[in-house]
Length: 255
Length: 259
Figure 1 (cartoon, rainbow over the protein chains, first blue to last red):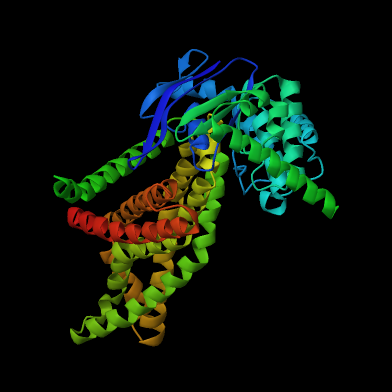
Figure 2 (cartoon, rainbow over the protein chains, first blue to last red):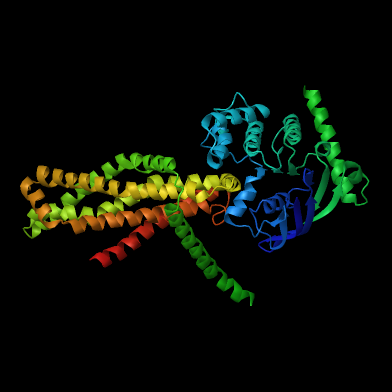
């Protein structure tokens, strides 16, 4: 469904992506992990056409996303959902208006049906009682959940998540991942999740790919990562597991 | 070779940015003509640009007219021509000061806010979110401002002119003793429709300049001015300064064309 072929991208002479190739099959959920600043979010923005590669191409359902224009691009984007790292909610609109926005602008549904769909989506993400609050009046976790509701309200076939748990406490981070998993089971979308949540992410995805120094260093399941020959891969996943245990321990001590 | 490259890079960058600005204006006009037009957003911006600037327009107009009353009377008195105070105040306001000062007020009040709003939307990825919904950001952020300013600025300029003429009347007639009949009578004799149209054409073109520059600067915040609060503040300052300069430069060309 999504085929990333030899993507290369430089910023001011600094090559961030050095030939990344990755394939995501229909209905599959892949996590993209890697150190901060290694180009995970940049790669995700190539998939959705917000950035154009210097070389290589991204093919979604047989269509090269970098040569699509106008209506064709809009048609493709109607099938995509994107959860931004900071939520990217419209700050002059309430949570309800944010979630209703794509329905109002992209469909001819009646006000009543839009209301019903928005409330249903807000209920799914646990925000039924915050619909008339503005993004600045709710917590970071609630912003993420509202943004998730907005990206899911059009029933996308493909979802891209850019660090959905960044900036959240471990419990809220875990709750967001569980929510993504529940949505995936409900909507059966194909997804790429950029994350640092190790090992939790292995529980909700089919495969994990690790990006390092501009290339995919390893691809596979948790066991495949732990048994990888590359010490960098083992260290990254191993430290993630240790970190997770420590943070969980600290949290349970506090509570 | 690298020294030559370094020497040529800034001019090339500026030419590139001018091209981007030109394309931005073309797209703004194109989407203003081609439906769908977001009329609710146009009305919202009419309220924001027009209604909220009215008090400041009235105040500046009144004081500009009063200053003209004093200065005009002082100059004309030397030649025994104080009867021409009315046409002097009227023509200065309708042809020059009205359109230029009203445009400055709108740039300061609405233009800067437009740049800051669009700039914040850019750096917080709200514009990306619009694009990813398959929606055209120009239709939501640029076109409503363009149409609203084309409605509001000529009207604000007219209000500025009328209140300015009244300010000149207060000083010239009520304070300095010029005859009321002479003040308005001579004004009617010397100010004709072509002068009023010149002011309207100017205010329309200034409106286009304000929206063009302020929306462009906001839209490309992060790319040209850096990210974060500093990027937005830089973009806003650049938008206001560039608008002021372009308004004055364009005013010269329009005046010389219509002279």
